[in-house]
Length: 307
Image: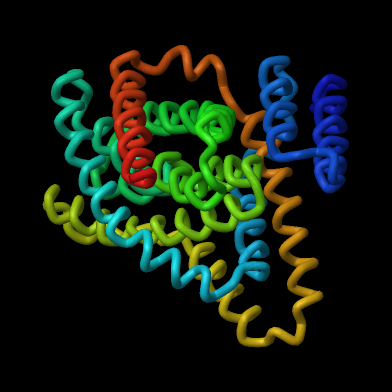
């Protein structure tokens, strides 16, 4: 039986979701409201089961507003940076995991989430490693907390350093773990930053496939399937479709707008889904590994982009 408090919490959720489609609710404001809901213990009865769906759908819709030429340019420009950053993060993660005496599977999961795309990469690699539930939870919590911090920290640093929107978009795509936080940080920084960050991050997410194959080979676990993020393919198809039939530009702009507002809804849900209790239970060594690894890739990638 649903309590009166649950009914009130559910109603508040629907009110905020409705307001998220209005222009005065920015991505940062939506995230902040979600965090307040989490701190106050206002939880929807079951909406958190579907948190990832609005985000993925929003990203696909945003593809209708992107230029195919810009996507190709971003792919070429970011290829070398992606190869370097993914390789460096994985190697550093393994070394630091041993130094901090973090369990091998946890270290690999955190490293994978940092190198590619946060929770999606962890979900893809976990079955290959045959990792235990608590190991997956530790890695996901570390990445999730750092994602929430990045949403506020990266735009602040970017503005303090006077980064251009293009530079910031590339930096966010390389140094922030999860696609949701990359998109959120880009949206907070500016329209161009949002486009660059989203495009580069989704292209980087494709590296789940080769990295999963490498990990599977190194762990000698045959027959493991790779959970491919199909929304990336739909995102690419949306870009191709919109650029192939430019005469429907006005309709595409509406779909792109819906995607941007849907992303605001997703950020609200992400913020409200933070579990403070689980964060406190996470091992300090796992957090130390995640923070140090994140600091190295964030500072190193920023220096590389600025040079």
